Length: 405
View 1 (cartoon, rainbow, N blue to C red):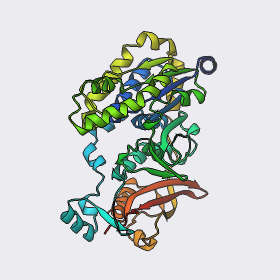
View 2: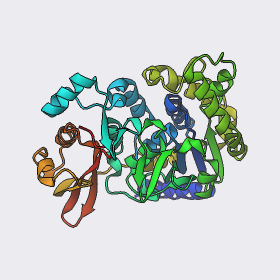
View 3: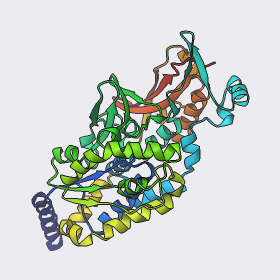
View 4: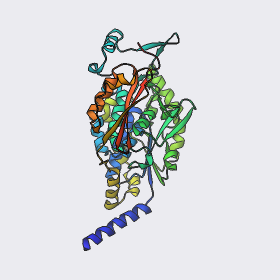
């Protein structure tokens, strides 16, 4: 009886401490592959027992923040990203085995390059990659958030930043499909096709707001810890000889972004800036080298970060919330198809092998590969929505507007 009373008293004390302590917001900036250093920062923050009450980010920062908000531990992020075949994910082409016969012939004739004719004009894709495989990866990494459309209801309240090409403004994404929001935030123009959502055409949020301090502060954070992974590359790009297209474009991009980044960083209470010399935003294959500098940068600020550490009991309660898992079995009660206009639903359904019943992700991914392999769609993604009988599994197709063949 006494031990029960003591445990209850300890829990109440922990809850009271959580109410009294300042609410901490973590802001993860964009930077392509360099954004993987955020994982190292999260690892060190957990080592120091610093809870994160609100989290937001841009581009790769939005991806890492979204994974953390949905319940993935930083060590698991490191394992997933360091073992990932980045070339396979980013090249975006369906595996040869899933291509329709006509598409296999086209691949041999045109070496994978694709164009179409529309209004008597030759049309090309608006991006090198449509994000088909990346979408699948992000959906898998955030499966724990299935059924959640309000980002305030995630394990940690979350925001992602994108840029709307139509209005020319920065957009704060706080609801909808989590994986889609992450994908929109990192849709680098030219590299990835834009994401169309609610009448908007969304691309990389870093164009207008690469380190969204004000956004996370507005969520209710008392203290802002911001992580800037671009400071080293910005300094190094100034020393370039500018003899390559990449160096010219990279420097132009950083000159456009940096003034606003400095304004945002000035609003933060503490800035962590990993030193990433010799590494660039495109070097995803060097993930193992990019993550450790994040840990080191946070470790070097232990003295300042220590003031936000909490006791063992409070941090244990925080981790239980951050690691909270979706324990309900996902039962598919209905399978729907959306987005198709030129391609009939019956043709798509012929390629879907998933049946009503317990969710089998491997089968769903094979369905996506077979449908995407038809060659008619930019992307084929899936979405799970709760209903009275279980979950509706929606296969969402985005047809190629440039009319390939």
